Picture 1: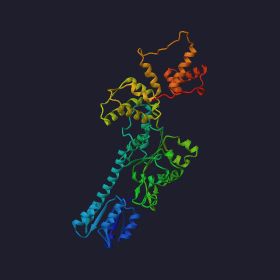
Picture 2: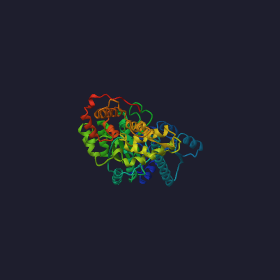
Picture 3: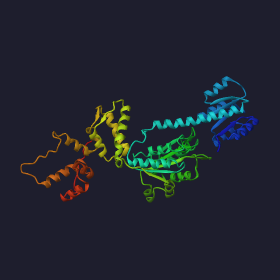
Amino acid sequence: MSKGRILVADDERTLTVSLRNVLSDAGYTVAVCGSREEFLLQFSSFNPDIIFLDIYLGTANGIQILKQIKSEGWGGPVIMMTAHSDVSLAVQAMKEGAADFMVKPFDLDHLIVVIEKNLEFAHLESRVQLLQEELESERSRSGIIGKSAALRRILDMAEKFAHGETTTVLLEGESGTGKEVIARFIHQKSTRADKPFVAFNCGAIPKDLAESEFFGYERGAFTGATEKMKQGKFELAGGGTILLDEIAELSLDMQVKLLRVLEEKRFYRLGGTREIDVDVRIIAASNRDLSKEVEGGRFREDLFYRLNVAVLKVPPLRDRKEDIEALTYAFVQEFSKKFLKPVPHLVPEALQILEGLSWKGNVRELRNAIERIVLLNDAPSITAEHLDFLNPVQRVLHQAAKNADGGFSLQIPSAGVRMSEVLKDLILKTLEITGGNQVQASKVLGVTRSKLRYKMDQLGIKPEQRTFKTTGA
């Protein structure tokens, strides 16, 4: 395997031949050229990792060539070479973006050191760029929090999958359950942990831009690609892991191209003519059942079987309510620090309410709710009243709690009232408050849903005959 691709541009043939032999023996892939025209052709097709460029390349000015490729967006290291020890030339070259400046003839051992140093620095720069992109994103970095048996099972299985260096993993689960956090856990537990982790949301990119985001593009590949070459996510993730989140959103055309990369481990940049080898571990995630997507003709069967190797079904938050307390405290601390506020205490009644909610948005919904609570309130404690916006059920419970004796008060007319009328009115008012949601209504009334349905049938309450009012938050 090549240690890197080096382009040597010098009009002294003896030097270029010598460098090609020495560097090839050292494990590098080397291309040489002796004029500006040859350089531009090689630069476009060879895709070097590092360039050695003479200050005077035939009749061309090497510093002008350096300036040109830098203006086009090439970010790799360029080592300028000259037979003249001219400080002003060195300063000018460095100002234009040269990584180093070497005077001929140079020591070959020193040359190898310079190459290794600059390639390592280029790798670090690429890594820093990825880290900056991650920091700019709004994804949670709080890690995996929880103690439930369901979560422990998932993590145990994820750690086993991590040992399969190239094994494709498919994460299935509702939106907001933490599939990306699990993917990062797998990456961190794998032998690729010191390499990049790149997350790509397939549903967040317009379909006509998906290919260029996946595989990158060459200059001039399409309108708007006139200034520079761009590496795609697969190339940026080289040696590491790429998460293809919401993979069910990919178009069928892109599914075909992804399948080819999975099978052949290589791809072309958009507008490119050279195949690029790729060594990445694929983790795919979906909030839909991919097998049903295949049945519906929306997802390719061959790609599904290629992904369906090691499958983890991430449970929703409502199935691991033991984790809600730990998650809530973690989010309270996170947002208290963010908003420069004292950390409030969570009263038991409030925690009980949080643990009783269905959390259709899962961990993401809980996190957003805590962010709102901490931002809008300065009280030393988070109480039940702070949660009124979360669920109409809680408004009913809180209203009852405000009664002087903390109980239920029923006003009976002097003429009397039948029990069936009381029950009917109670059920109708509860359904009105919950917007017709029978699951929530049964919680308010303290009965099972089946018992509520039985009473509704018995009292002649038919859902299709009722009009419910919309209550405010």
